[in-house]
Image (cartoon, rainbow, N blue to C red; front, side, top):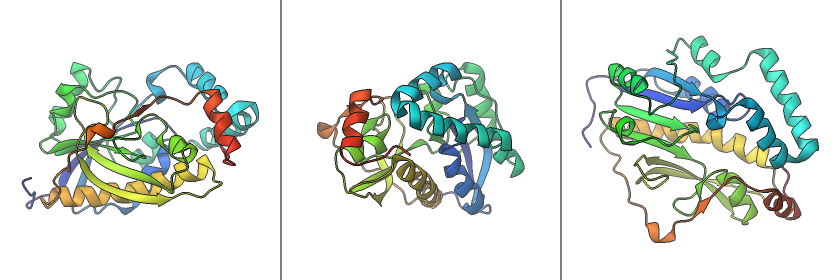
Length: 258
């Protein structure tokens, strides 16, 4: 990988509108990234799950159950009343917010090209990036995933790692390719899990420390010293969104949702 020595690395973020958890990544990243080394040229925020809010609410009710769902709704109402959002956080930091309906829309791809990013970074973006958008950055499109790859490919990796009794959640930054969660590994960190843990604690913690991992990976990319390590796809698995029976087994292990 060629080093960028004469200017900051140009970074375009694509993420989802999540004021409860994903925002924790950006609170840390926006506060701690070295502005003389990394220039954020855009932050694009998509609808969560790329679906209407009522569908997301129904999904969350089935996942959390009625009591935790109500508690989560109160949290959501509080942050909305405060006006918390990733887009507003970016705007307060003086960062450009770039509208995005779909990353694969030709108009968005054209706008992304105008921004001339060296790296496009997906942070919980709610759709699969296709070939055209992956090819926009001069260096790479990358993604951060809170699970060990290729074993914990797919959705809600923190949940599945807790359910399966893993000792650590493995936060992974990897290059994006057309196949989901199959690109080479650029950086990892192991985040300790407790025998009886809280999904809320784990998601929050991995988002915050994942931001620091992302900064480290980006700086290494700028220096030209971050070559991807290919995945051994013979170990691949894929996990979809947990079903009520999975949540029941999760609680039976002594874990909590919130």
